[in-house]
Length: 224
Image 1: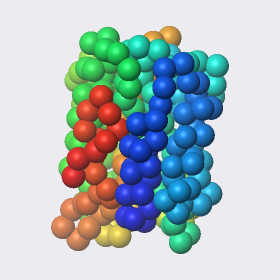
Image 2: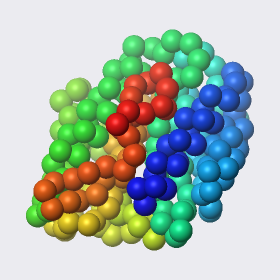
Image 3: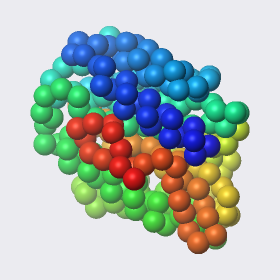
Image 4: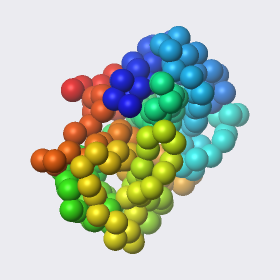
């Protein structure tokens, strides 16, 4: 799984370098799919949303095209030897974004990190979800599901989505070896959406993550 995640991240970065102004979501998705397949991933799937379309977490708006200052949200993954990857990156490939985009991106990244730091054996899934929401609420985006409109994450392994889930009502306790997605977002309808997603693994001493963390809003190239 770690290798699958690393390959997906490499593919996102490589495909991002080939994007052009005016591309729609379908064209972006095609580049992302081809890049992952070239690295050996199979059963590749891609969701690519641009600009205001990214405010719908799992929408499908291929008619929107990349312009200056627009966010591109790519949620994608594939399989390697049967194990799944699932990564989301949001960035602005061309021009300068509105300051609100930068602030939202930074808040989402902080929420992702806050959730990760809570992960360890014995912690309830609900508490990880709540850690991310607390950061988003403190930044002024509203509490509960106002801006982060979905659960924080899901289990992943041989299946792309499986138990357990980082959900605000889940009493399930984490155990060493569990792997889950950590994917907070801020969705401002009519404007833009930001989501970042990485896979975390519960360890005996806390948690680890597969691949590298997102760097900033300028590029999907990541840092360790």
